[in-house]
Length: 225
Figure 1 (cartoon, rainbow, N blue to C red):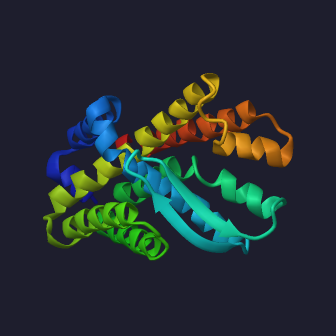
Figure 2 (cartoon, helix red, strand yellow; figure 1 turned 135 degrees about the horizontal axis):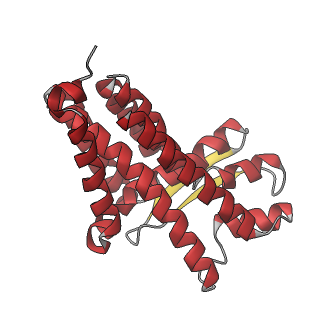
């Protein structure tokens, strides 16, 4: 059975979605406007692992410079805190990959409603005005497409969102590595993990890079096969 995306325009629609997402991620002006979406996913990853490991999630803050921070309570060391720090950078590309699997299975509406639900869950824990506005705007856009858009538009939007999370997650890791080389990110997740585990921050950054690249390759294969 042909999926909605194939019915709409065939494989060129998926390629067009990839090109659009890549332009948005590579063009500095559009990246500055949209990077907060990647930050939402990043902080959501921290929050998810904080909850899964039994830590107390006390709040998420998103800032206008596209940075963010997730606060949790619990032991100052140990696997729970390590996993909490580890969950940030892999979250955007892995969410993009999960979304790509649903899009390829002709479940674009399900994918968009799941994304909306995750944004609502994130909104509950936001603790600043800019963060609340960013999550509300993102959630409203995704929910509007899921509810009102025709299937072909919905499918292309979902594919573009998946590509954006995949490429955006990759660029975020690249920015981390460049910042660490310049000494700008001494408080990064990679450096926090280095302090907690004794494993060099560069190896953690390399792991983030490996996960992001693997997700892009897997997501591309799923969407284009």
